[in-house]
Length: 76
Image (cartoon, rainbow, N blue to C red; front, side):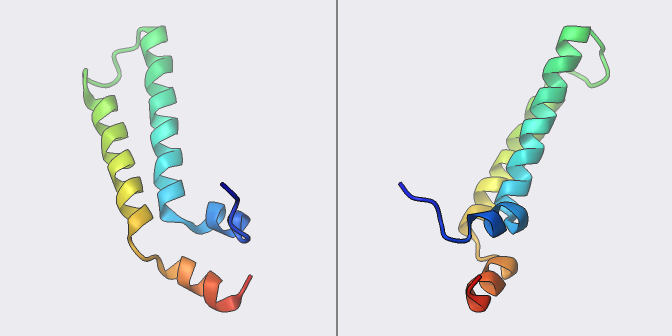
């Protein structure tokens, strides 16, 4: 495997990356809440949100994104 030549632009503009980062943050927050014993969210809400964000990340990965087209046209 090799990195894309414009990997920095992809990391900052791709919606798939944004959704998957959010999924990771929600998952981390859920783990912290479990350790603290805080019943802030009903059981199952955290995993459902993580699952939804992960699914959106996968969907965004396979769909054409306007930002990605602009990067490839600019040749950055």
